[in-house]
Length: 440
Image (cartoon, rainbow, N blue to C red):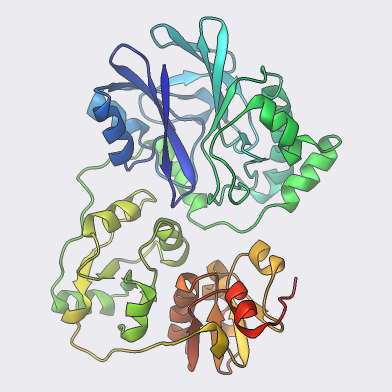
């Protein structure tokens, strides 16, 4: 038996391909972008016979139903999820014969109400457990994605679920879905996989004294999350399918202008330095990088057509797939060289050139860990709603490396802010360049 983690670095998640030893495979928590897990199966000459989902995902569209259509896989999921497409609904204690191996459903609510973990058994020996958004490496996934009035109750359910899981033997592998980089919660830099024994000994949430302390610690660690998280669970309940391979369609400049007149949004995915050199006024900067899909879903409107501006050296198919996995389908693309109107520039500054007011758009935990003295703080995800709170004076916008700062600057520019500059580094670069200390 071989278990192959397939990591989506951008979303911070892992899916798993399990070689069942007879030419068939089980896939757990695959996203709609099946290219990587499909390639892993093809290299091993495996046919996906089972596609299991631990819960109704909020941060990506599930590929389980797509595997059912393309490979004839049987979808395994919680009966309590009330999915509207064909699947085998499982409840706590139900088992699935995988042909030698068995998969046992464990009810582990908390991250969601209907959450299941899947214990993989070889005979009577537990080999590993796919924990989805329950027990993750060094933490537990967030419980505030269902509704505000359910957050504490789900946190208490999460406590019970973790306590149940750590009753498994020490050597049982822990294969979580959510990992470092996921806004479903995970400590930065954490390993992707673990064991029950390691988590029992080192997971901070398993060291607290009782349920109330657990709830306080878990809820105190929750940061912000993209608004599209509140939409995708329902789409996954209905079972997303691809009607065609995602692609960007080239648009003539006349069509672009017509769409813009009707309210379409320009999303410029070029590197921040290219955007700074010249961009269409009002365009939203979201550089193509591992976290592109998250920020696209966070910042771009979901009720208007999106038009992509990309560089000639950027992969159009990759952009389309990144958008598709969070349920976004751009109306098309246009090259910056096609634009027949004026362009706007954004000034870039190095760490030693920072002078005057500073806006820091990193996450709350990053800002608290160390920021420039006097810096105003507004998380990037909140900038569109709080642009009127941002200082109207000449301003340097900063994050960790510049990409998020450029996104924020593009939002502020559209809101009427002028004399903006973007720091090409981060807080540590400023401290090193100036010899001054950061505020914590």
